[in-house]
Length: 221
Ligand SMILES: [Zn+2]
Image 1: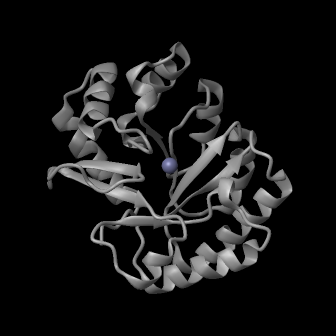
Image 2 (image 1 turned 135 degrees about the horizontal axis):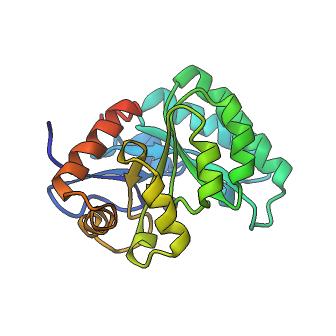
């Protein structure tokens, strides 16, 4: 079994030799010209939906055709931003349609949108990873009724709320990933914190997450 700290969602390069990242590349132009030295995800983040989003979908299609991205995302639904919810749905549904062809796992941005995903997951056959997951226990139990749903945690683990602790207690290691997102914290620290909360060893956690990576179809090309 390979031995590394998988960082499922980050905006930076790997920080140590034992860290493997999926770096969020948005729709980066450089991605269209240079193959990156590490695995990336590409997608239309709800914060950056443009009026001409159909053109963004075409850019994404081009990236997916040219590069073996590890996942589509981050993309999703955010109920606290100004972009109209119906537009966010259109963009998400266009990405779902596009992914019928590419069949990649998803890295999902979900802000106050758990109920939206209880609906949207019916249209998504691929594995789904909710990044920086914040929903409550009841919502988590509903989402767990879907197959191949994963929940990723990051810096919120460093000061866990009672609500988060409940969710961590409930979720089996088989359904989780860990991440740093935009935070400067080290991925090793996030692993230690989760391992403490879950009362398992870091080495067991690492191998569990590598297994999840394979089960979720995350390809580190
Ligand atoms: Zn992010």
